[in-house]
Image (cartoon, rainbow, N blue to C red):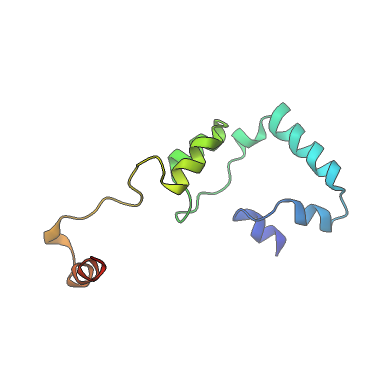
Length: 102
């Protein structure tokens, strides 16, 4: 269960604590792997379409975490999601949904 949750961004500490590792050992290992070996730039987690784009992953690997937070929250002014279809290609359901939202 912990392994599956870790793969989608859940806590990485809980599985290690369950295995009997101390929190200080975990933190020292994380520091060594990220700062000395730079594994965070090499071992990139899988992209999830609901939370990240390829640009967000590039920010993470470049250690520019501030821009990742902006990109996820949408505060940088970029339009989120795929480009909108032209009006003549939209289904009747889509048009009805858009009208009900306005």
